[in-house]
Image (cartoon, rainbow, N blue to C red; front, side):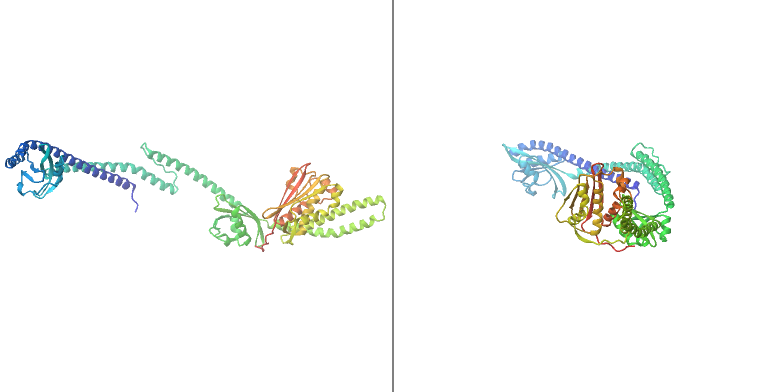
Length: 581
């Protein structure tokens, strides 16, 4: 059950007032009682001193009858019971009772203390008088020794009556103080709780969306500062909410205008946000609130989502008869992922048409080019020198066309998604030496120094034919653009991969050309490339072979100092997964 803050504050103050008043009441009364008893003891001691002086001669004379008469008379005069006790505890005289009927008082606390030479006192219930009495005992010395004790006593009922009167007065005053404190607590609780209630009501209005509410507190204290801070917070919230609403409208407008399909998934794979394009594509209503696998039915898409746990991923996914380039980007918070679908069906169709065209044209060109080359070689035999020069030009350009056709066919084959590698266990040094052997004549003609550096046995799993193409193209490039100096082929291994570097001391590649060297038909020096018979497809083929082997390639070059290509290949190729679409 909720308790109002007024009741909490008032209850707290009331409990404190009651506790303090009760404590003050008890302490005050006990102090007065203690003080009164101490004063009474001091009075009895003073009286006892007078009595001691009066009875001292009679104790020396050992006259019991006169001692009894004196004690009775003095006890009546000072309204105090007087008892004379010898050092053995026997009562010699008593102003109230007969001495013969009294018990031995040797072991009474006040008597024992007096016999030891000190003033003793005690409060004890008296069976003979049926009342609580205050006793004070004083030692009496005779001939240098304590021979007797003078004990005076007063009943506490007279003291108690006085204390009861004082108790009533203190209690009345305490009740008045408590009532006054309660009134003050009521006023203070009301003053303190009113602004808090105002702030509470204002907070509820803000929570319901009313940002125009204001709290006014006239006191000059922390509550006023709190109210001013609340008003500032409300103003800022109104500004933030307005900005957020505007941005939300802009976002909804952007999402509605996007032609690409958009999904936003949480960590569990539930769709939080989408746009109209996605609703039209997947034809599922409603999309929001569903798990992604209820909407996007693709094993490859599931795999992409799993990979996106470590960072953004992008890949193409077939959904029905359409192909989409899917990018998945996790948000910085890690609580959601943004999935964007870009329809590349038409692009893929055009790529296939282009690829088929290249393949068909290449196949159609191969036969006539072969025939031209054959007839040219035939004509070269038995012709004069002038005609022979023309025929050699025809032959050189025919060879270049044949090389282009062959490279185009190779590249088209590598670009086919269904192209499979013929994987074998390969000893890398043997393969590199075999490839370099094919270029021995050109190496000798240029007088280049070729060095191999690496372990004697280094094995990896790869397609030997494709690796020969890869390293053959890199070595061919190095020889084309290196007129003097050396070529270094180094290879090494780390935990899971093999690193091969082919470096030359040739003319190098300018920095601005490096990003484009893997493009088809892109050559840095076109005149030199044509002169050397280059097709402009070698590095494109290299890039595709490396990619097909799940590796990477880097290039570093300094004009005039040489170029170094670094190829990194995995030692073991992952098993090719089955089609997931």
